[in-house]
Amino acid sequence: MDISLEQIQCLQAVSNSGSLSGASEKLNKAKSAVSYSIDKLEEQLGFPVLDRSGYRTRLTEQGQAFLTKAYPIYLASEHLKEDVKRIASGVETRMAISASAVYPSRRIYAVLKKLFDEFPATEIIFHREIMSGEKMLNQDMVDVAIFENLHNTLDFDAKKIGSVCLKLVVGWDHPFLHSTREEQTLENLTRYPQIIQRSTLPDDSSVGIPKKAKRWTVSDIDSKKELILGGLGWGRLPDHYVNEDIQSGRLIHLDHLNYDHSLDMFICKKKDKAIGPVLDYIWNHF
Image (cartoon, rainbow, N blue to C red; front, top):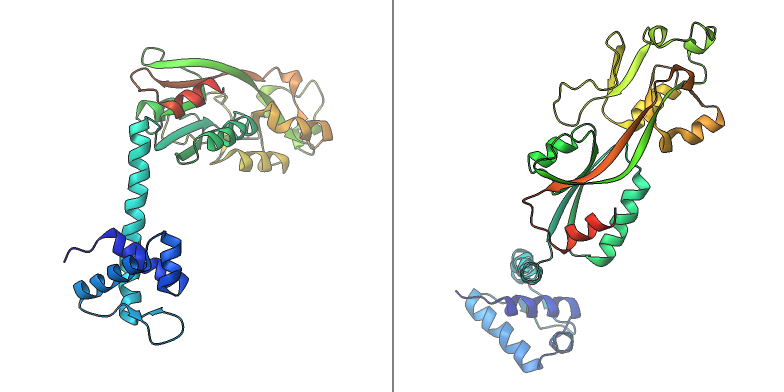
């Protein structure tokens, strides 16, 4: 049995339009060609796929069962044709990107929107991570990564794309604020839980965590902020993420403790990574 994709396409067109004439018009084929294709299909299958007894041509129960199984195969073949065209053109069919949770979302989404307009058929896999971008790139989990604390300059192409200031903050009603200015020291602050994010990938790193600090660990930056806003702990958060809350008084910036931290941000890729149009676009828009 050698059923063609064209036969499946014809059957779907008849199902959608309700007639051979409608299918003929939709496919830009002669009605006789569509009819022959369906007749040949019925001969090959050994059962009728169309009920022509009524005013509107309908699929038989067996015809519908066949089309349900066959049409996804037709669609897959069409998608494969498009993928082959993109592969031949050099345009990546898939691009995996990671970005540190401390990097401004609006900057990333602005680039991704333009990227979609330029390469709508490329599948984008986007990861938000914490202290794992370099490891994800090393392990080929992503094609390009935006992260801080770059260590591997030997294997990576890297470009600085800005900096982020992490501000030390507490909620407006945190008990620490009830003490005198003289008593407000980093050592006394560590008596209260520090809210930290765990690394996306397993890591022993403890950057920005005083040795004596109690720790509450969360998985995402939003939870960290909410716990701090609720007066349940303290921590450092990106300036672009907390400036409005500081201005409104919901968060208190403990700038007098001199524990803010500026981070250089980099976009990186492996040096041996071939650069296609999509990766080139991302690289040059940061």
